Length: 185
Image (cartoon, rainbow, N blue to C red):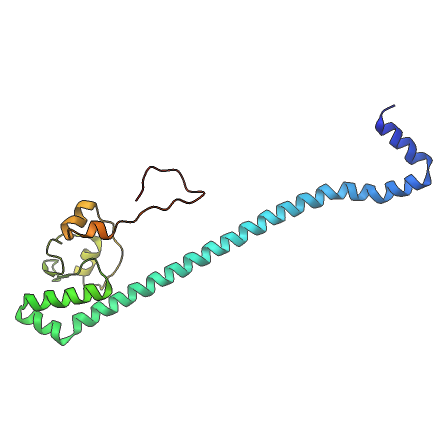
């Protein structure tokens, strides 16, 4: 007779073991079910909390980006409507326009500024090498105020300003769960 047979005989023969089996059997049967439910609920709850946190963080970042973009547009609008800029533009004072563009570029930390007419012809720029056409510039030539982010090649950056590729260089930081890569920036 095996171990289970001896346990079964002990339970059948003694009231003490019968009461013990009646108390422990439901616990032993429900424990794995309760444990499985706890693990499932915990993982589901953790996933939902992580999802909510990521959504919240992305929403905050998006709002901050939009506020900064609107602030940039407002500054550019104030420059475009200023008497000093309008007068310099009307009389064709390139030095004064370049000085004003450079002032606002430095104050707001823009990479470059360009003034075009509605036909898209480049009139003035804060960086003389900047002639690249872009989606933002095309939208601006249609009369829409625009500020945003664009992706440039290293050659385009160097053509815009020789020091620009170095200024926008971003080193990659190692993190514990990052995908392996040979890139450093």
